[in-house]
Image (tube, rainbow, N blue to C red):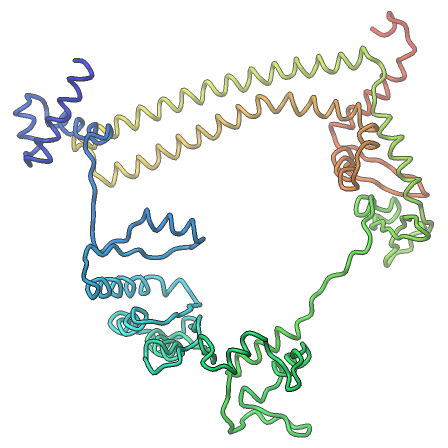
Length: 482
């Protein structure tokens, strides 16, 4: 049967099932095929896009639109309520109902809520009493905008925060400020900022004095005595006042770094193993042992130029001047890579075989589910198990593919860097680039008696050994060099 006939058959079976509402058994009898075959063909019709199933409900949010809005406005979540109606009152009731359910679901997961104003927000707060009643404190609620200069209840954000707190068990905090200036004087205050009586801007010291004055939380200090239970009205809670005061008094630790030193943090003392630190004197950088809480005898200062001279000499000693040994190392790397490549290729072949086997098991599992031989719970458990195994196989295959290339490149890069280390160090324009090169080649640097002791990383230690042997053999003739 050709492709065109297959598609026509899928369309016919889909219409019998979805448009004429025939059962799969009746379709099987009509088409002279088995019932499992009907089920498979219906699934294939969905996969090919011949049949598209769309579910719409006024009680569910549009996930696609929510995802797009979250990406554009950097939201962590939210609720989109499709109305399906042109009646504004119906839309408001639906929105409030869904929003209250959303709050009921989200409240256990949050501890801070900001509240706006308006007709919908007011109705939402009223609706909460039908869904939420918590006795214990859960978090904090506060307005995110000041109150409106009118008597409409739903535009008084502090009142909305208070009602919300009563119904949910949250602690309410209030914003004692209007949403926008209600007079010319207030408007000027907003435009010009807070000023003193003579027109100068209020300084930080004055703001600090206000924030640390306990009078505003119902306390006061008279003489040398602190009265904690005063009778005058309070503007803020004691909890908020002391939290702000603690934040103001908190010290910020850390030191200003005046100089950046090339070898700072890279060198340790060769006698006491303490850090070697740097200092600048007369336009020169000097390095010395901290001698902190020890009897270390290393008291002399060493100039940075002297240490760099030793570093360049050591980096230059990595170069293998015997060209025959250099070519032998490159050849050995290639031969080693051939063995490594064969190992990774064999492993990838085995992993591909495992993947194909798991895929067969998934296909058989799907057929058993369509035929009713296994339960839905068994199918879901085994499907999850098989798909996780497939993911593991794919990840392992990718790792071996990368290693197949990276093994040779890493070895060759290390060798090439070792042969040009001195030149690279001289050409590095920035201090950070030089530090990165030293970190790449050496595992430790020790300073003792003004001399650096270099500890190579494993790969460069091997190159250093070959360079020492190879350079000693440089004067031999061709017969001796074999």
